[in-house]
Image (cartoon, rainbow, N blue to C red; front, side, top):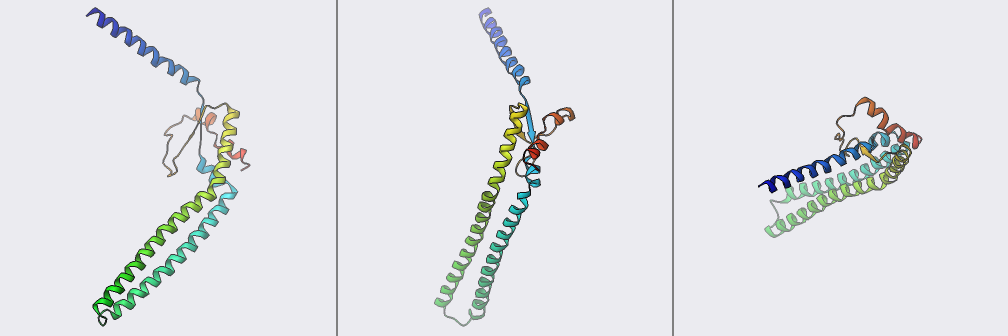
Length: 181
């Protein structure tokens, strides 16, 4: 029984020692944070990207509106003649309208995917510039890690930073300076 207590005590000391070591190392770690969304919004190139995305979205929206009008017109024509056509003609017409509706829905999905792809293509160079600036500032300040302050949805990641630490480790303004913003 003494042997079990002795082994337990030794195990407890070993665990305590191991847990204390990372805590000491963590104190030497320098962590900065940045708000990339704020940087992105202030980049002059962002206005051009937004305009191109808006133009693309409007063009796709116009195509969808035109296709929807065609579908509505075809449905109205069908409704006017449904009472005077044969059962076979009615079934064929309904199949044709269902096919048109399916094509319209597919066109909507494709437009959404194309918009997302266009956004990714246009944003990629800007995000690469921001990442380069973050890397440069982090190296200059000797930071081990740089955290994003928010998610892409705008959800806050860093919930609290003391004012003293904020001034020292918030590199958002320095990243903007690195990008000449």
